[in-house]
Structure formats: C-alpha cells, structure tokens
Image (cartoon, rainbow, N blue to C red; front, side):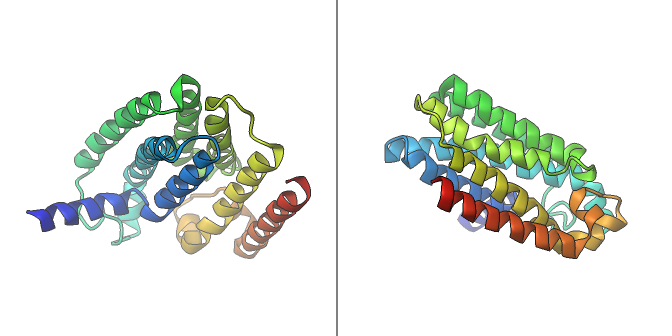
Length: 221
C-alpha cells in the first residue's frame, strides 16, 4: 500500500514538472527567510508549492494532445500513468489549497492576490501565450511578482536589484528551457519568441540575460 502511494505520488510530481516546482519552492523559502521566521517562511513556501502544482499540472493537461501526437512517453498522460480526469480534479484541489494556504500564511490578502496573479499569468502561458511573441511575458510577471508578494506581505518593498534579477533570470530560463524540445515545438506550431529567433540565438540570449543579472547584482546590490 505504501509503495503504491509513493509510486502514485511520484507520478503526480512528475506531471507537475518536479524540477522547476522544487526550484521555485526552494527560492521562495530562501527569499521568505529574509522577511519572516523559518516557520513562516516554510508556510509561504508550501503555499507557493501548491500554486506550482496548479501550473505544472495544467501545463501537462493542456499540452496532452501535442504530447500524445509527439509520443512523448515520459509524460504521465501519454504513458497512461495518469488519467486526464484525475489531473483535472487534482488541479482544482491544488488551486483551492493554494488559495487557503496563501491566505492563512504570512502572505495574507495582498500576497495571495499577487500569488494568484502569478498563477493566472503562468496559466495564460500554458493556454496561449507560449505560442506567441509574448511568450516571455508570463515569466516576467509570474517570477517578477514573487519578491513583491513576499516583501509587501512583510510591510516592505523589494530592492530594485532583486526584482530585476528575478525577471532577468526568469526570461533566461524561458529561452534556455525550450531548447530541449525546440524542434518538436516548431513542428507542432508552438512558436514563441525563442522558436522564432532560432536555437542558437535563444542560447546566446539566455546567457546574456544571466550575465545581465550578475551585473545587476554586482552594481545595484
């Protein structure tokens, strides 16, 4: 029974894009530590984690037709490890959990509103924007708003260098993250800015954005 539960949990975490989800949750915890106690920072991170589940699961659900057409067997829906209806129910559950956990965490109403702005932005990316010239915009909004959610909830304003770096790194991640499925995306008509500019240009841009983030940290911190 335990092995089954662990196996199912692993599958659902895989569908939630485990790597990026853990990365965002960890960054949230570390950032929240600058404003709150460790326990409160953990509460904030758990709320953001629930929101990331919504984003990851909705991405897999929305992309399911394309993933099936491309026979991406690593995707749980394609490999039939998860039924789409199960994923829909999980998204609703995670969305409610994200709302409640945010409200009872130090985020409060202000932070919760900003958190849900990030979720909404990421969902629009999954639904449509990733195939348009506006593909970097949700990364700017969703990740750029994270410092604001945490700092404003604590009664402070994030320093300029911090939210600039969040936005620069977020867009760099966008350009870098698409490289692994670059040709698949083009073949299936997913034509965001990176696909339109080309693989080499996207790699160069991601590197330049990271360098810019480092320079911002050095000169504005």
